[in-house]
Image (cartoon, rainbow, N blue to C red):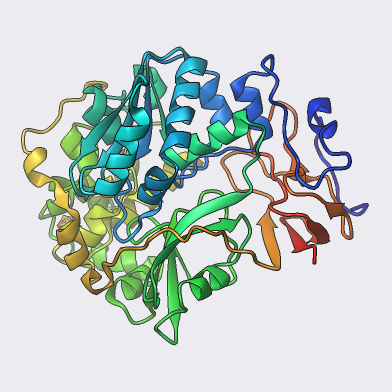
Length: 472
Ligand code: SF4
Ligand code: SF4
């Protein structure tokens, strides 16, 4: 610990430290004079649907509507439905607390109609509260904030903007359950996620943050392929890795395991220069990628075929063509569904956005947004998407296993959210109790505090992670 530099001033809240002494489990402050935003900050709550934005920031805003995002449109993942089915009361409590904090009169849980058990549980939990259920169709993408806000409120977020600009706070359903827990003094120590694809028994698990995917896949009966590749976060928007010892972080929604020679994996693992090269030489500007783009259909100036054009004409006008990528949400539909030639428009958009960020260029297109008349007709049903992805054989339920996994140790990356990483406040050989903060976020910086998911001994602290072994 002594060798670690602490470049920032650390403020360990007295309210927090006073709760440590002589306890096996930490409880954070529950006093009424502590705001929900502060309790949520102390509990390290972040967007649990993949976004990872620290939730306390949203709770400090003013809005008229709170939407619980349970849309969960990534094929084969079921964790939001499991959270809603088994923790509906906590989610509704989280929505109500959030409504109170931001001054909202309307609270909505958005969920796909096909998740009937979860819908039933939500309706029962909403009874007698101001929160209502909004049913969504079974299409991809449904959970994109721009799409969801329009679906529920008919409001259109200004181009490049965020939901609060139209008076809406959107949080994932698990995030809201964590907000309710934070109000009770419980920090985020565990994560719910689905293990799907080429595994013996697809399952939805609750695991301590920092559990490896290897242990989670073992709990799903193990992989059914000798060379598994993981799409962490889902087939459409997830990251691909062959490293099974990758730790599960607060933003993980699930993993789809596939054989290395699966068509989707082969496409995702193609090196970036080869992806760009194919598009540069052969894209015929048919525009299918744009015609199916959900942001384009909602009325935003996203035109991936124009971004593909920039691959071929990099000597002139590149910044102009890149503008057509700026409002892309990286849903992956253009690359993995729409393009008949199986080129990589989404990756071209990602590269364009990164380039524009580096250059400090902001989008300067029209401020008006008008949904396309063909929008409803061009929605992509999940079954058709799964067929295109060649994963229909993996379409099985992944029921929630009630008891959490209990790994012997966890690997805790110091950065698990948007913003800055944690600065460790523990050292090797320190004994910690469950819920104890292991790191802190510098005062006034954006980030999320990391807590011990169980009682144990810190075995290693490096610049980017802490390893914690469970007490025997
Ligand atoms: S759909 Fe494919 S071929 Fe057609 S314009 Fe888009 S990238 Fe080019
Ligand atoms: S990834 Fe493709 S389809 Fe999705 S928003 Fe971006 S350009 Fe549109």
